Length: 120
Image (cartoon, rainbow, N blue to C red; front, side):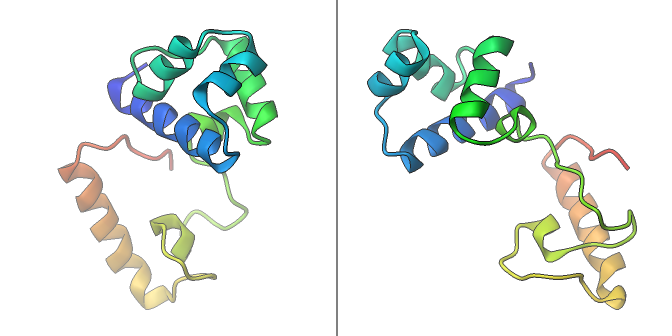
């Protein structure tokens, strides 16, 4: 797993644990692992195995794809951008005249920060 992906998983685990107001010790007891193991996951030094990843997804009521930061397919067309695609707090489709501008800005940002390319 790439370092960038490890950090996404680590941040997601820590965020979800904090949202449930669980300590690392409490989560470690639920999963039958040591607190140090949970700490290693949350810092990206280690990653949970596939069985444990599934347990985490079940416990936090999410998917393993979301835990790993993988894009979740939407029902919108490939050419249609939504505000959610950019993490903006608005709902709905971006007007067509802004689509190309946003797409270009997003592409430039991703290239500048060496982010993985989203499957088209």
